[in-house]
Image (cartoon, rainbow, N blue to C red):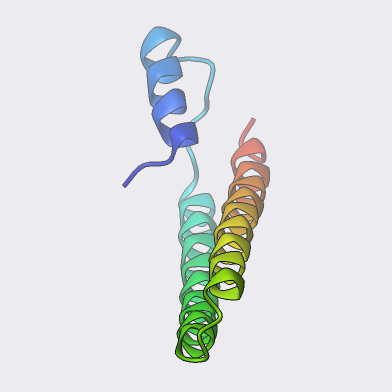
Length: 95
């Protein structure tokens, strides 16, 4: 699944193909590594969050479970932003 950034870059490339230089093999490798690192972080946090929510629900603490879910969603948003920021740094190296 492509990110909004990737879709926007594809549209930009179609409109003005010379604005963006092609990525080197090293950059592609580093972008893939960043994706892998963040997928691992997200998976770890998802497991911990699901356990926390389930524990809270077992204790009958629905409100706290809802807050824990919201915190997880916010944390995922931040991780996605961090990932895209790191990937953008790699992409800029070619320009």
